[in-house]
Length: 135
Image (cartoon, rainbow, N blue to C red):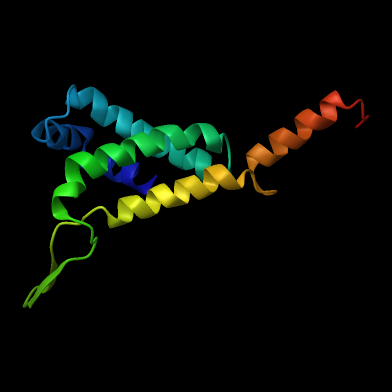
C-alpha cells in the first residue's frame, strides 16, 4: 500500500513518465493500474480479504518490475557505493527485494486463511450457513 500512496503523493503522471521511459505501453493507464493494484490488493492482504485473488495482480506487478526495472542492476538490493559529506551513497536496487516479495506472496497463497482474517471468517460463515446450524 505504501508504494501506491507514494505514487499518488508524487503524482501518478510522474510514475507514468517513468513507465514511458521504460517502454511500457499505455503508460498512463498502466500507471493507474499499478497504483490501484498496490492500494486495493495491499489493503485486501492487510485485512486478509480475497488474498488468493489479490496474489495474481501483485505477482504481475512484481514480475514487470523485475524484468523492466531491477534486472539490469543484478541481484543485490543494497549496493553500497561510498560515504560522502552528505552521508551514505547507494546504487540502484537489484531483484533481491522483488524476489522476497514474491516469496511472501507465495506463502500467503499457500498458507491459506488465518483465523484473524476476513477470508477465514467468510469461509467459516459459509460453512455454517449450509450446515443447517441455527445461529
